[in-house]
Image 1 (cartoon, each protein chain N blue to C red):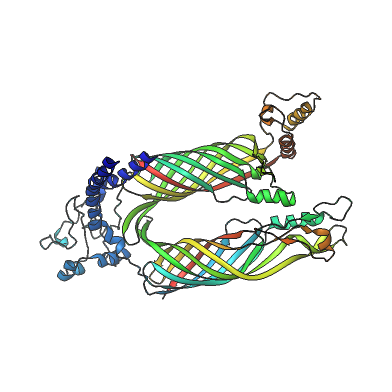
Image 2: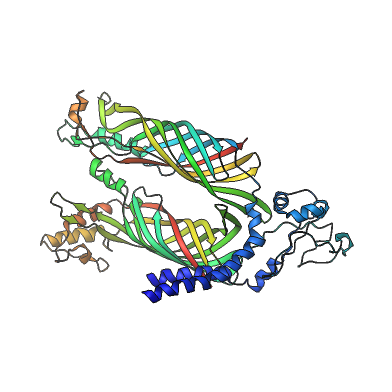
Length: 265
Length: 365
């Protein structure tokens, strides 16, 4: 053990020498190119219109229109507030599930799906506002088509916020229309709420000139889920209340691909 | 494991100090020049980097063409122009400097970034210890992959990528649909890829560099790859379950055959010295699926196995692996048989996209 400990400094010193030489060479020849940033951020205010699209749609679909306002305190740290409205709705898969569920008459001769649980992750994000810290540790340059240098930054973003949400149930139907011979729901239970959310993102921005940059990021909006279990469909179709809140509904993650443009002032 | 970590730690700094290859020496001495007097983005940047000495002399400022010949390794470069350097106008127009006609006013020599590491002629082994599916709607895959790349040219290489998914099962979302609504994805849409091997090529159209936290400088390339090959598919029959007494039942699967596959992908390769690189990629594994057999058995074969299980006789084809529907004691798994029969009752087909995130470590030699 002691011998191993003695060997460590020796090995480290042997490794450090060539590494230091290489580092020195890089510092003299290379580093200045990136270290002297062409686009400096410290103290700048920025405004960013952004469009977000859901990457993986299961039961809900979103198009999030956001406007972000950020202040860069240093070259690598900024605080950004972003808010907007998400156009949302159920996917075709969710509509098919609704139709299939209603088609089965819980009070018929062959009752099916009498007592059911609602599905997870059905809350749709609408209004949203989040304030976060943006850390931009990477500043780089890439050559596009041989001789067009494009400067970029990579960043991480995290912060809390608040949002308004809507939820349309898949299984909870208040009123069924049977006038056409087939069972069709005309009033699915819809809930609305305002609540907390969190948001985290990883992204790049590519500077087009001193006044702007193209912004591309993957952003996760996370918020608490809630839904009802043990819903008696006979009761709810008769106008009665049924169902108990799920004990551990977990969190809903809404992962979006954001594309936007940042204007620097 | 500890040895591997130690070796990696030892290799990293050594790799950084490895002298450049002869081919790279040529690149190193490549002259950075701009024949047009209009300042480009790079020139602005270089002005920022200019030494105070150069600013004092004012020579660089007034020069119509700036040239910077990088010195050989071990010799400190001089950013300020030499006082006794011959005037650019005095040099013959046709003279080539490192192969570039810098003194010909009719020729525009573009700015070319020095590439610190050459790839041409090198072999690259990449271990992707963690591959995670990103578009897991009805399926969820986690696995590992290995890639071998031979860099035929600086920006073009041949690549072979075997991968294995140590977890390939239906997603939690699909299981929720089955449990709560008795609905499930079409058989072909929830086909699982157990393993696959693709051969293809990789191009690196872009390269660049970045500083991390204003400190470390790293080189990177944008990599794009494509390939074709084959892979083994399967379908989940009975999901994993655990009853109220805590008794667990493992998920069961039925083999659905080897399929042709294709892949396209892209990502970044960040050079961590001369021999090591980190790769972050997204690849789309595309495969077609038409499910008409499970464990080599057609619907008629499965009916025969069920009949046989009920001691009513029944024979099945030679390609049908009836034993795969038996448990360890040799008893037929009736639920597996029933689900397999349902799966192929209505043959379905689909083109599946298995989009995954690959994180890998490369060794080049």
